[in-house]
Length: 212
Ligand SMILES: *[C@@H]1O[C@H](CO)[C@@H](O)[C@H](O)[C@H]1NC(C)=O
Ligand SMILES: *[C@@H]1O[C@H](CO)[C@@H](O)[C@H](O)[C@H]1NC(C)=O
Ligand SMILES: *[C@@H]1O[C@H](CO)[C@@H](O)[C@H](O)[C@H]1NC(C)=O
Image (cartoon, rainbow, N blue to C red):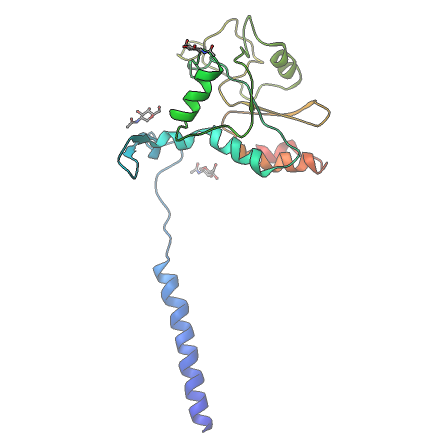
């Protein structure tokens, strides 16, 4: 009798071990070789949507509009403000609000996208006709990149200044007094700045060196 119990315990243990080992083998994950700065990415591919009605360029999923909307929906007492600008790569050619919003809705990101945050009129953020709001922000927040290529394509303003916004989706984090606290390079995705926003909302101290 005792032996029987032992056997069934042993069988149970064996089963557990098998159950444990088998799924672990099946669920193996492997590290991919490609580096972050590769020339190729999924954003180079286009595929038909599930109804085979239109082509979807996967680069739309690299668009920060989606992540900014997600951040806006997630965080209370926080507001994203979007300022369209056509000075970088002429990426915001829309003639007016209707055109800009329709481009977001049907082209990029497309798929019926409507920003969950407030958008303002198109302005210039650098150069001769830069908006005073951006003169103010840039006066108090150092530039987020040392260099920029004024010879290359994509920069549509003059004169150039070191304090200039370098590209679309550069971001400023403003506190509830309306004063800028942090400035972020384009490469900081909305999700990357979530912690700073939460710290600011909770009135915790922000350590600027955590984001380098
Ligand atoms: C790739 O990017 C991720 C996220 O920014 C970073 O943690 C990782 O170290 C990078 N890897 C390489 C090889 O540069
Ligand atoms: C997808 O869009 C990107 C960025 O606009 C573009 O560079 C790329 O050529 C497009 N790819 C295809 C397959 O259309
Ligand atoms: C917006 O611009 C487009 C293209 O120039 C024009 O057809 C349309 O009437 C404009 N809409 C408004 C509301 O001004």
